[in-house]
Length: 155
Figure (cartoon, rainbow, N blue to C red):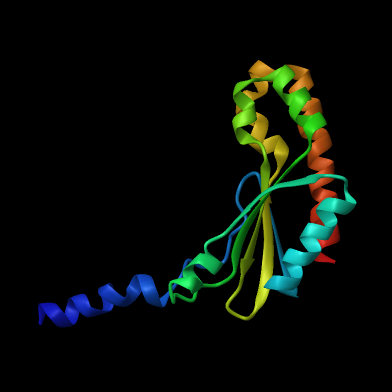
């Protein structure tokens, strides 16, 4: 009897994944009709078009596939630019732990993809007292750029 009750639990981690990304404080979540690979390609183009740098890129999907495990597409792209880094460092040394600021592309069960990100203003908020007006200006400029990147990527 105990084996019958435990059997569904043993398969749970392999048979399902967390659900959709729900809107939450400080996040922008944009569902699209685009396939995962297309949204990734369009996001990379939007980053370049908005004169930002793609600093990091990582995700478990390809590594899992090499191990014989299929999981939905899942990729994090870190985006920043050196002039913002210098200005942020002038305002707060501790706040630079947050750079690069990340976009998150996830594949949905229906084959579409979602683009999510924490707004730069939200990311830098814990450092507001230390960073003052200079950090607020950096965050505000980055908020506008990240919104433009997201809008272009999802259209």
